[in-house]
Length: 59
Image 1: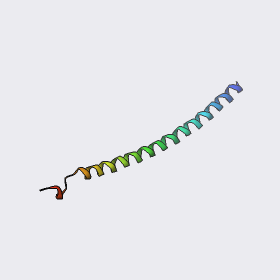
Image 2: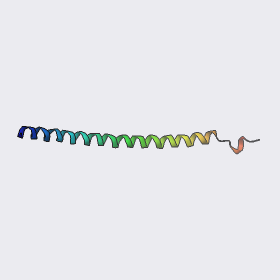
Image 3: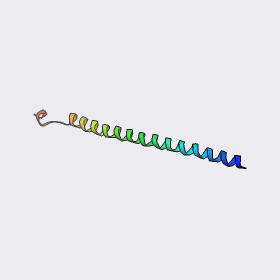
């Protein structure tokens, strides 16, 4: 019985470590996603400025 408890405690410890690692990875991916979204918004604004008709382009 004691062996089973030790085995369960060991498994729980490994699961806690794995969960923390997954949480860290998720946080890092969210930060990367936020940066990509910010860059996409910047590029969309820049493209809109480039494609917008200008006063000097009008006859």
